[in-house]
Image 1 (cartoon, rainbow, N blue to C red):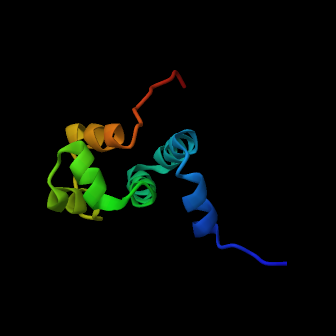
Image 2 (cartoon, helix red, strand yellow):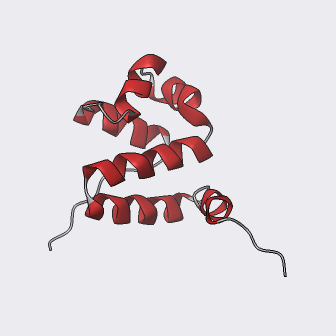
Amino acid sequence: MKTMSYKKILKTQLKDPERAAEYLTACYEEGPEVFLVGLRDVVEVQGGVSRAAELSKLNRESLYRFFSREGNPRLSSLNAVLSALGLKVVFTAA
């Protein structure tokens, strides 16, 4: 029996916007650091930082800083990246 790495399976699933949204929601619930790692995963699958920068009309270098551990992303940048990925933030009552 041949096995696949979880990263390969994850990347296949994150191509689907619905799955990407579910993944990011789960990451967000784990905290800001986990959310940014998850968003990086989605951006990578969707064509990388260069493509996200092009679609979001943001500077590529700014996006690399955005995704770094030391980054302090602005809400406007987050919204631009999510929009470029075809996603949006939705709030529900706890």
